[in-house]
Image 1 (cartoon, protein in one colour):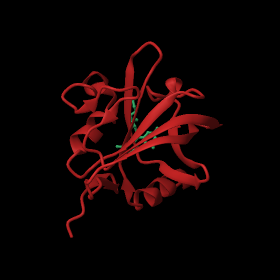
Image 2 (image 1 turned 90 degrees about the horizontal axis):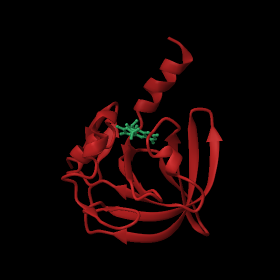
Image 3 (image 1 turned 180 degrees about the vertical axis):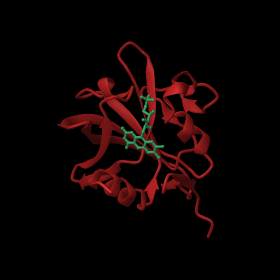
Amino acid sequence: MDLQNEFRIGMRKYIYSVSVISNTQSNGSRNAITVSSVTSISMEPPSIITCINKKSSIHESLIPNSEFCINLLNEKQQDIAKICSDPNKIDERFKNIEWVESKPPILKNALVNIICKVDKIVEYKTHSIVIGLVQKIRNSDFKNPLMYQDGIYRINTI
Ligand SMILES: Cc1cc2nc3c(=O)[nH]c(=O)nc-3n(C[C@H](O)[C@H](O)[C@H](O)COP(=O)(O)O)c2cc1C
């Protein structure tokens, strides 16, 4: 098996928590995509990275100083994750999904909403590493995140 396939299989073994990244463009249109690549970088200042495919619809709108929200999904938000990762459902992402009508849009019932400002974008091959400076946090009382491992959405059954 070639290196790329071995790598894909290896990375599928990790357990990922699932988030949706949302933003509003200057023309008012909204974007939301499902991501797993969210990691905090530093507490000083609170900052976070996510890796966004250059082909994704949200990519070109993630420009320096623009705001976006990272919404960590709860275990019952699998449908939202599926809609926001399906290129054929781009028009459904803000229909029948509970959003706070703010800029950027904030997903209701997420475990946490992390509102960030794009500080830096580092391009790497197919993706851009987006470094966000945290502006505001909205923690909820939900405890159980939606997870993804080996290509399957999973919930904590303990
Ligand atoms: C669990 C999961 C995690 C994902 N993580 C990322 C990610 O971190 N970065 C990314 O660019 N795409 C990620 N994707 C793929 C995008 O959600 C998908 O390509 C989406 O269709 C892109 O948005 P678009 O349809 O608006 O172009 C992930 C998909 C799933 C199902």
